[in-house]
Length: 576
Image (cartoon, rainbow, N blue to C red):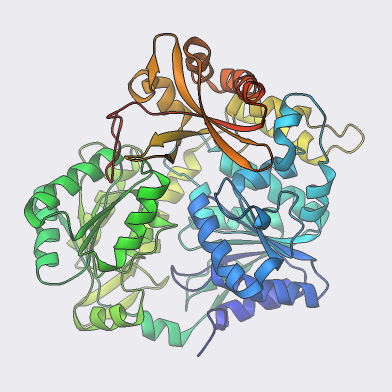
């Protein structure tokens, strides 16, 4: 049986790596980009290019998935660096394993002299930490930036921190001669070319004829193209018709993915479909589910008739459906959602017999994509008027018996390239880049202080907010956990947290002889003040952890606010 990295596109990528070149690798969803890491590790080490591979992903869920895949092949040689509740022995805080899977957040902190393994002490000015150890690991590695389209956010008025960070790091790595692979399926062409220029590297695209840059090499994987050529059917309808069609398709035995743009829309669609079909065969997945509920939902996806999900389905959740009903979003998001269709061998065969459907409807509000939503709908209407459909997977146009299918790339270029080009740097972004550059490159004045200043303002080097872990009481003993944004808590702390009088319930996680969870309370005024902004969180939260740890004679690790009764509904999520 052919291994997932035995494809012509991966062969060409390996060629580029063995020459020591950085590469932007553009390949369809499901091509095997992430699965190629074991081969990239072997080839880069044998060629003397790198001592290890550091695989950087934007989401914790993706890190967990990729870590489990790599561990099944590489055993103890692989470690992870992310806020995951996996085996402590697999944690690689200084990134010294032969393969390390990391979130962009953790990677950015280690690179900017804020070692994740010692972050608490560094932020409290106890010491500066052994920051050159993870930096040495990074500088002797092949860095793979995967799912890079998630850093782009072309709908934002200003470039997101994740993209500013990524572009600056690529420039720094290029000048230092460090090899990088940037992997994407749906990034706008202009941004792909910009990144290739910054890395002084190659562009490799898996297609027949989709290259428009002299640095780009097209690799025609004929076998993959024939295997994935489907007669996609795309339609634009209203919301009521779309949800009715989802019900109809499920009743005929087809597996349906319903993908929407907000948690509120997901719960609304789930309730509508559950009312008509019952809850037994419908799974709800979104970013405000607890760890246990998310695990249960993911476990139930294979047997469900309908999966209702937010953008979390675009990456990090494995779905194999035959039809997509979706709110309009950016073309890249729509392509990622359509990428969850016809993935497995049996499903692919059924999709050849009965073509996959992509049913798109206009959301009541364009959030979070803004003007990109109506722009996408206009471009889809234009294709419809000339009788063209959409090829949602391959990077080339195709002709079917039913007419021409234009690659989704046409939509991406017409909507997202234009939106991305309009983004301009404000004074705050320029200041961010200056401080970050100092954090990454200064040698004579090496210090974590510039990065600490950025962290105190943003709570992250790659996002404009922080994730706060909440403790959710279970029906019986113990707690479940949910990571939510500091911004949400700043607005709704009084509706979410279990506060009575001048105290709020918290759960201390600390170390004695072993990891312990201890129920406690924290001063209400101080806790709510800590959750009001990034600067207050960074200044007050470590003290709250330390106070609770002293009371219980532990080495404090985390202090989790506890949710109030009714704020979280089992299987539905955070509803307060």
